[in-house]
Image (cartoon, rainbow, N blue to C red; front, top):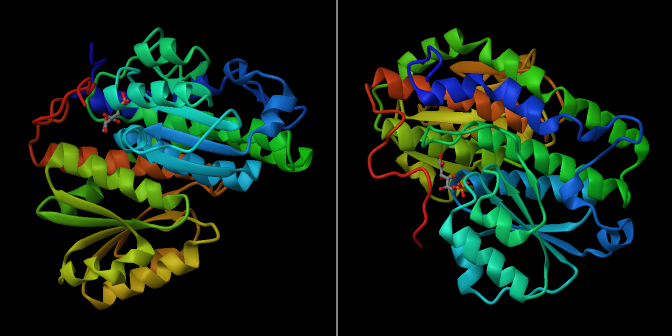
Length: 365
Ligand code: F6R
């Protein structure tokens, strides 16, 4: 059942090129530079009238939502925000019919996300789900939605669901963007880059042996920091979550700019800092933050863009990912971190598919 892999998590990491191809297939319009998402179909006028996108979710799905936030703002030029699902329902969300609420959940059964959907419905918002499990409670409750088609995810640590969620969010932003200010030319370029995601991920997976070798040097630490900026900030959060849940290393994900507002006090010679510093508008600033960490003797593992020697030079170790659109790059970047976390946990002898205290779906609040 594990298809020759030692763990479901590794199997699912390797399934990503195929899962992503399934999530993307038939959904890109390479003529209009847009996307075709049946679950999002409503009149272009109704879409054009939306004033805000609010994404709700928990855990890894919340991190996908955070990437989506950058995508909606950059591509669709629409006000976008993310709310942890439990927070959303216990606050007084101010919204109405021109708010577009996207509930993101792999299982479609997460209690807080389901409750947020009910709350959003009550407020009269335009609600949609982004779910993997077909016919799950959240999918049924929202009525309208886009399935991931990632296939069953057995490992408690979510991998392929995250990369498929991000890919679909990019397509949603593209669709919304094309009804607004995003030009056909820009749309065509982005659609092409989204279409190449399965291949980009395959190229990262092909480096597994290199990543596994690097992981050997990070096994004996009890603490680690993950930093990033812009869309790579949620990637850093997701990298930290993966590492902590399967290896039990205390891993903190921080916005790179926040380090010097407190957490830098914890850096000591040898403390690992994993810096997601792929090419994009935020790269140079991230490299500046890496220098600050180096000055405290931290050991830096960079996730960098292939051929970016400026970035390679400031890192102790690096994993390079193919060059692509900075939002699209979040997907191969996170795959590199999934593989890294997996190998650190494996070398520590952890129960990777069944981490202590965790369940695959959290149906209690
Ligand atoms: C982490 C993980 C969890 C889930 C969270 C939400 O690897 O799997 O953080 O992402 O419990 O679950 P779903 O997406 O099923 O709502």
